[in-house]
Length: 209
Ligand code: PRP
Ligand code: URA
Image (cartoon, rainbow, N blue to C red; front, side, top):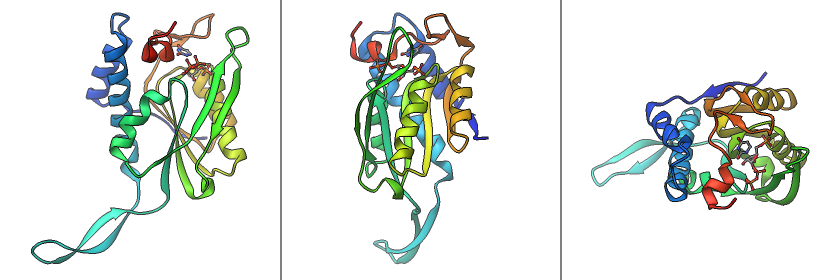
């Protein structure tokens, strides 16, 4: 079974509380999603491997550590996942960005695919699939499957708010994919919204209804 990690850094928790508040407007909401995305990935990438190279400082030759191993790619699930990308790219400017377009049918709550564009070297990359919300888990499960169908072998899922139902679905379908959340909320309501949650992430980021 994969790992579930709740990244409960105080800065992340503070920003998440403002994000949840229904009085937080789109501009601040967008900024917070970006910041929390960056802070989460900063924590999550603690385990990236390093290698030593030789460099020359203005004073002397020395050996210094640089990132080694697989190159990263960020894959937002459209639309709301887009809100997390810029913050992550500030941290990892060399990362490639793939896009997977899925929306949740309001009746069935099942994900419907409408777009998929990934980096060419899928098998060589470590993927961070990002989406603010992990509700039923259907969208994340489908996005991960799409990546695997195209050859991805190394995938982590990074969401801001999740619930037990979504975590269970992803972990059962993809026991090799670790799940990272800023908060594990209580449950889903009858409309498939996370409780207490933060409402509709895409609408709040983009100011739509
Ligand atoms: C939201 C959210 C996730 C999905 C989560 O997207 O951003 O992608 O729902 O729900 P699930 O776990 O039950 O699949 P939505 O379908 O509303 O599309 P949007 O990002 O375009 O607003
Ligand atoms: N999608 C959202 O944006 N919010 C939820 O609570 C559930 C799905």
